[in-house]
Length: 403
Image (tube, rainbow, N blue to C red; front, side, top):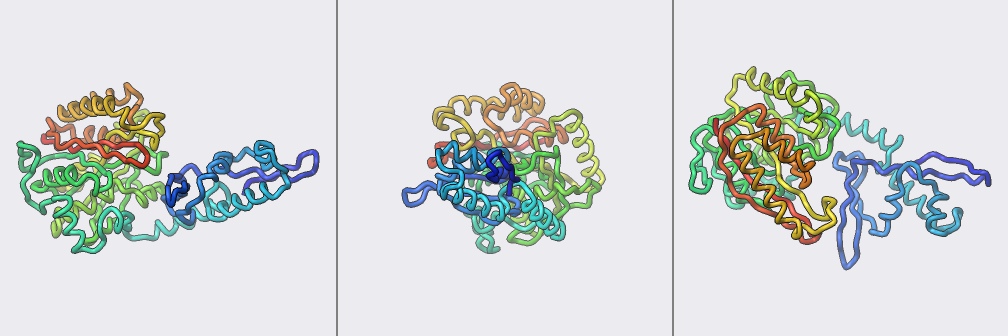
């Protein structure tokens, strides 16, 4: 736990440790009570665990600077009294579980990293929740819920046909169950492609220190593994970012269904906003193109990204319903730019408002289109998912491009 200080009165003060920045804290209501759910996406800490919402006040001062005496003075209680002792016991227990920065978490992190490195494939993390794990149930889910036609189905993109060889597609990564039409359109639109390499480029939700994070671990799916092509791109410790990441997993399992039995492999690429740092976009465009060309395979580029994320859940002071007119206007502008193949215009439009609506597909879309430089795209459905519990919303759409 945090370090100790000895003030003039010889009382030993404990510094409250800092809550790890990568710990997810969400709210949950049950039996008319409000709770906090602490979750570590990388599995370093035990859990997830559920705490009463009152503990948010304690967690908010776990900053690596506040002392037990500071906490007591703010609460108006005796620093040696039972209230502070209970708080410190609670903090100590969370520390032992790995939720705070410090020696315990670092030891756990090293063990988690070692276990990840020893895996020969990337396990499913969304099976059983976002989609069924049982193979037959999964096939039924893809066919009946998502409406994906295996292998060579008609492309139901409004009244327009995509053609035989689309070169790229943007498909969301929101939960399958809230976007079945958009997923179905996106995957049906690429079904007739003869591609045997899919460059999957998706948002990195849990890691932001590297512009691009590549993995070489095949994806486990309900229908068997989806292999990764051989490549010469460096695999750093940061590839553990792939462990909890749904943005590529959802595409991987749908691809395995779409082209079940086909000799197809993927190049899994996670992208962060650091791709916009000086020179990174040009560097990674060149490196990824080189790998694709050297593979000798026929590629298709599959972008995993949603559009806007708005409302209190994402930090807005207003409910999503009040923000939707501006969101939808912005989304229409972005989709029109994408349909015109204007990657630079798309980037400028988002950067011009400092990504006000948190378009989480921003970075992977720019990288992919920079690599492909496609022609005009065709828009699929545009939809909004409202989360009533948090008065927040996410927007998403599908786009398919040809040369």
